[in-house]
Amino acid sequence: MADQVDPLRPQQPGGMRAGAAAAVLAHVVLIGAIALAVNWRVSTPEGVSAELWASTPQEAAPRGEPPPPPPPRPEPVPQPEPPRPEPKPAPAPPPPRETQAERDAEIAVEKARREKEKEKEREREQQREEARREREARQKAERQKAEEQARREKAEQEKKERAEQQAKAAREKAEREKAEKAAEARREQLRKEQLARMMGQAGATGGPEATGTAQRSAGPSASYAGRIIARVRPNIVLTDEVQGSPVAEVEVRAAPDGSIVGRRLVKGSGVKAWDDAVLRAIDRTDTLPRDVDGRVPSSMVIVFRRGD
Image 1 (cartoon, rainbow, N blue to C red):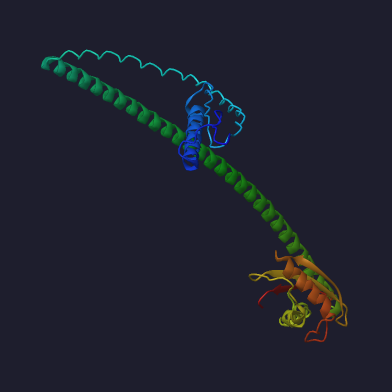
Image 2 (image 1 turned 30 degrees about the horizontal axis):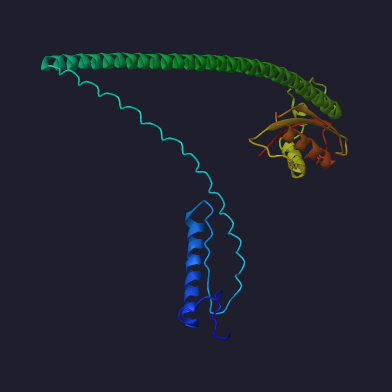
C-alpha cells in the first residue's frame, strides 16, 4: 500500500529547487505583463494565471482582483488653424523710361517754379519791410507830436508862471515904493516935529526950515546916532541865518532921562529875522545915552544896517 503512487499528486520535476525557480520566473512574467498592460494599453488587460505545482499538494491561492483601469486620457484641445498668408501684391510694372529731353524739361519747369517762389518770397519780405518802416515812421511821428505838444504846454505854463511872477513882483514893488514914500513922508514929518521941539526947548523962533546957528545947534550931534547904534547892537541876537546886509529904519521915542518909551519899524529891510532882531534889541536896551549937551532927543529915526 505504501508503494502505491497517488495518481492525484503531481510529479516532482526535478526536486524543490527547480520548482522554486519556476515559481519566481512565473511571478516575474506576471508583474511585467501587468506593468505593460497599465502603461501601454487602454483596454483592460486580461488576467494571466499560472498554475504552480509543488512536490506537496498545495491549495491554490484565490485569483487576485484585476487592477483598476487607468483614467481616460484627456481629449486633445483643438489648435486654431494658423492664418493663411495674404497673397503678395503683384509687383508694380517698372516706370516707363524717360528720355533725356523729358528729364531736361522737368528740371527746367522745377527750376522755374522755384525761382518764381523765391521771387514771391522776396516780394513778401519787401512788403513786410516797407510795412515795418511805415509803422516805425508813424510811431516816431506820433512821439514827436506828443513831445512837441508837451513842450508847448510846458512853455505856455512857464510863460504863464513868469507872467504871474512878474505881476506879483510889480505889485510888491509898487507896494514897497508906496510904503517907502509913506515912510519917507513920516520921517520928514518926524524930523520937522523934532526940530520944532528942539527949537522950542532952546527958545528959538525960527521955523523948521530956519538956518540960524541957534536952530542948527539945537539938533543932536553928528555922532549921536552912532552912539545909539553902539548901545543897541550888542543886544541884537539872530535866531535865523541872515544873508546879505539888510537895512531897517526904526523910530525910537525916549523920555528926558533917556528911558525908551516906544519903538516902531518905519522901513523894513525885507528880512523879517533882521527886523525882529533889531526891535528885540531896542527893547533889551531900556535907555539911550545922552548927547554931548547932556540931553536925550524925544524921538529919533535910527538906521540899523547888518555889518555896521
